[in-house]
Structures are given as structure tokens and as C-alpha cells.
Amino acid sequence: MHVAEPTRAARTLLTRAVLEDLDRAVLCWLATVDQDMVPNVSPKEIFCPYGDDVLLIANIASPGSMRNIARNPQVCVSFIDVFRQRGFKLIGRATVIPRDAPDFTKLAEGLLRKAGADFPVHDAIHVRIERVERIWAPSYRLFPDRSVEERMQSAYAAYGVRPSSPDERV
Ligand SMILES: Cc1cc2nc3c(=O)[nH]c(=O)nc-3n(C[C@H](O)[C@H](O)[C@H](O)COP(=O)(O)O)c2cc1C
Image (cartoon, rainbow, N blue to C red):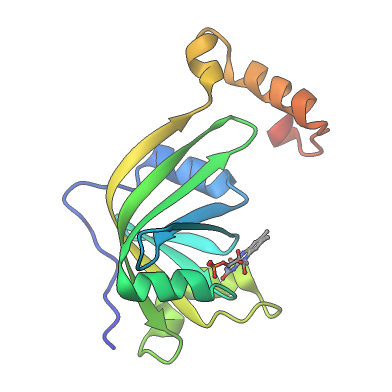
């Protein structure tokens, strides 16, 4: 299978705002549908952006998602920065790049680095993003004047988290 080079799209879908929240998201959630159009959503920790409009996700233990993508490539991936209470939905089409594909190591470099030696990446799920939608917590609408710092403090209190890094203390 030929592995495409990262796309430099006319319009970047993976904007700075998307990349920022993606980088801070611990998990993304991959939604697929089965042959009866029953939705399936499962968490993935090993994911990374690729070029301007692709998200790669590691297939480590996702037989259901793989089965669904083979029948219907339409997917939606959501992720949030839990402390800033915001994120995105990425809607697009998925293809599966198997580990034995030429250039797999190059394409999946980011996934393999993130997975490390402990987690075998069997395939890369290559999501060509077609549409991006913002996710805001309701508090952004209810309390529009709150600063990001106040939102983070409120999330820390709600989730019982004490940030250790000065970067996250804000
Ligand atoms: C915290 C967490 C992180 C996970 N990360 C991944 C991942 O990166 N890749 C993967 O294939 N499975 C991952 N899994 C496992 C799948 O979510 C799990 O096996 C799920 O049942 C797969 O469902 P599916 O076959 O319908 O996709 C993770 C699970 C958890 C709880």
C-alpha cells in the first residue's frame, strides 16, 4: 500500500487552536458505525496530527473500530482539554495503514514514539479530516467573562486536582 506524504492543504484544518487542544488532550474518542448504523465510541490514547488535515490513531486493541471502518470509513473523533474545558470534533474519513505498508515507520513515527516499546501499534488509522467543530463547555456561554485561569481553577476544584507543573497552575 502506498503511504501518502503529509498533505499541505489549501486550507489548514489542523489550526493552531486545534493543535493546542489536541496536544493537551489525554484521550481522543473515536466514533464509528457498524453495518446496522449502530454507533461505537472508544477511547484512544495514542494519536497525533499529520500534515494539515490528517489525524493518526494507533490501532493497538480496537477490533470493533477496525471492523466498522472497513465497512464505513465515516468517523468522528472528539477530544477535549479537560482543564480548559474545550476541545473539538474532527469529522472525516478513515483508512487503515497496516504495519507492513511501505513507509509505515515514517508515517507512524509520532504514534510509535508515543506508544513506546510497551504498546504494539498494529495499524495506523489515518483520518482525513473534512470538517472541524468546536466543543465548548456550557460554562463558556453561561459565564463568558471568566478567564481561562478561572476556568482552570474551577476544573481543578471540581475534579480534585492539584497541578504540579507551574505551566498548568496558571
Ligand atoms: C485510557 C485508554 C487508552 C486507550 N488507548 C488506546 C489506543 O491508543 N489504541 C487502541 O487501539 N486502543 C486503546 N484503548 C483500548 C480500546 O479503547 C478498547 O480496547 C476498546 O474496547 C476498543 O473498542 P473498539 O474495538 O470498539 O474500538 C485504550 C483504552 C483506554 C481505557
